[in-house]
Length: 52
Length: 247
Length: 226
Image (cartoon, rainbow over all chains, first blue to last red; front, side):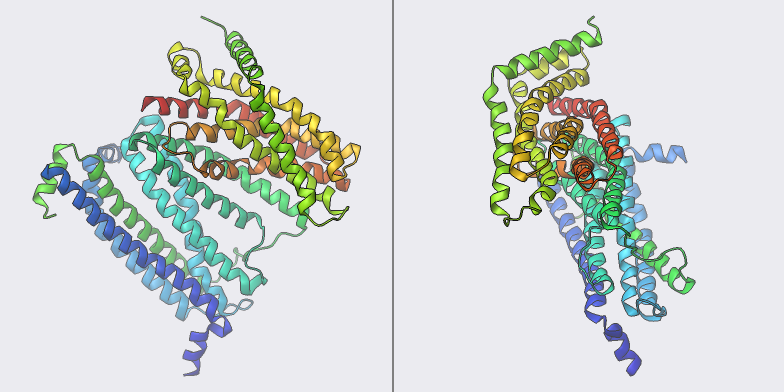
């Protein structure tokens, strides 16, 4: 239990380490969402172009 | 192998290539990031000097490395576009610039977060940090120039010239800031002592580096594939592809 | 077929003539440079020891800003009146033409700026020797600065709007010139050796004079091909 607590608190550096990893994790998630919305937009544009 | 690369220059072959390669690269990214980051966060031993805070290294170093590597790749693509007029290089240039800008921003942010507990300051005018900031500005300049041009093809070539000028200037900027720094501040700060890193810390670092490189490669191929479809929509192969794909 | 020096000389003279007929623009940029510098001693705390330390850096930033503002009109008039298309069609080396143009501008702006140096020395409390160093740094560094600002203006030529991104492009590229130019004067003020910085500054300027015209001509060709 103490080791788990020690790990979560990162020896006192918890805010720094977790915010850094959180930032990168946020970037990964946002990037995936952005890529998906880009795909949907492109497919919509292409179908509009071909339906003309 | 050269034949394979020549074939990639055709938009149709390039699109097929991206679709084929994507699953493998995505798998590599999951493996690398998942294994590397868990190993680095949980199992790697704590550092003697920095304690647990050094674990930020496992995200900071891949981001910093990628920001530089992607810029070098952009320079290469710029040469391909300007000298050999390969259109695919122009399309890739903008996509790579987006990812590179994100990497540079993350490298600065994570480095700053790492710096606060280590040196007590969010920011110092170290040569490396300043060069990274300049790199971010150059990426932003490249992105904005690409957006504002009237036609995409013209925008690609302007972006290529800007990327090349920036590439040539980058070493000059780095060394001039380094000299400015050492002259005015005396001893220069050391970010982390790299040469001797224990293997128990090295392997997770290499794994997460591989993972992030694969993630960026996957994202670039994904986006570039759709970008190719959009730009080449007047071609018959795109029409056939879209008609068989449920939109 | 005209020789290279003849082409250069022709366009150099043309540019001098054109600008001398429109001196108000030149006056505008020099006035901006001077006024921008003059308001600094007023907005900073009154400290006679502080001002000379800040003077080199502030002078260089002021020069950069005034070049950014005036670089736009370097190319805009010729672009809008179709003269650039004639250059593209003429078969003369576009890089050479542009080099002559920017060099002519540099000669014209240099004299007023050097005349401002004694005034700057007065405002900021610089000694005679330091003022000489400031003038030398401006002399050796401004060609490179003007060429880079012209490059930024060329990117903006055919774009839909011309937002502040011009400054964004130019700042990273001009950073070495700024560092060496201001650092040169600071070193001289502290009594350290400055000739190395002066040599590097001149080298950077020469590289800009030699290579930027080719990037410029590439950008202009792209703007016209659209």
